[in-house]
Length: 241
Image (cartoon, rainbow, N blue to C red; front, side, top):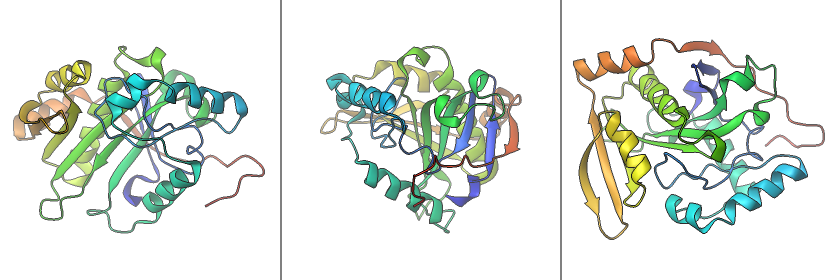
């Protein structure tokens, strides 16, 4: 989605930056904490050490089960990023994606994005009949960042962005029934359980954003600064897609 391709949202714990091809090798398909399933952005690093970490992450049967996703090849991930970048239709493009960075480490792009990445957050706008509905997903891939409020702040920041910039008035989150951590987090953000799919073992939670909820959401994110993003350059020898 091009609407956020030049946008940085800087919060207290997390900074959200747009999804670029420079991020592709670091993201991983899967690792989950405070997460809804079906996240398919993925990662590893351009260097061998992070690629090893990627393989280590994806060896976890628990993470594969909780995310209900299969690993993507690097070529598939580049294709996903290219599709996201080039889709000119704002309302009906598949998703709005931000990469979640550690604000303290990133500090205004003084470090490379890939050195600060902890996950991603997605807002899917796929209902052509109701462009005010967004399905939200949050992934905190780095284990050391789970349970510390990074997922909560990133989710609130994405929700606020969706309300202010995309006209979203309804949010849904679809989460595996066994993922109690994620379900609990969304309920703390005022989501209500509205459906259970026994076939997929999935719970759907929903939040309708009326005047009171909108005011609460904006108050929760009034510390967030919106800035312009400078896309990091790919390392030498890496082909742009």
